[in-house]
Length: 180
Ligand SMILES: [Fe+2]
Image 1: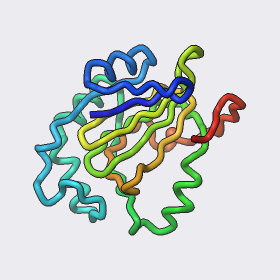
Image 2: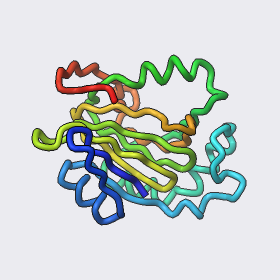
Image 3: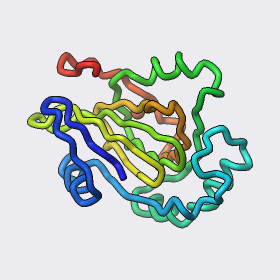
Image 4: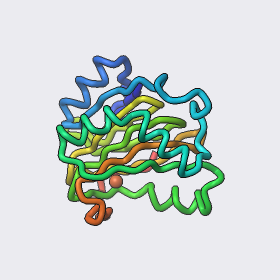
């Protein structure tokens, strides 16, 4: 289950209901998929081939279709990042810049871990959402954020797009943001 850390206060929020309530107040969608549906050989594995990525999509077809119907996504894919990914260190540096998109950014973690750093309401400020397999999150359009990996440096995530051709990161310069 996701864990939240509020940067300004060091407050930690855990437990499904608390996490959901906090994120709902910040207009961030949070859901959870039953990760035990995934075939055993894919549990925790982040170096996967195209066929295995398709298995991830097939396994969670009903969850993906449900999100797509409710929120208007027209396409989806699976991204896998690990130490085997070429230029992973450079990629991570590029990731760690606050930016916005013109559509929401939805990620469902199916292996490894990821962390979203999100700009909350004025009285909350930036907060980190640490994600584990089964966690599904969507950052609202226009909301400053970035996504990066955690200590295990690996993740598999389903991404859903309204219009993948228009999915571009717009840098967001923010004097309030402090690197952790
Ligand atoms: Fe983004």
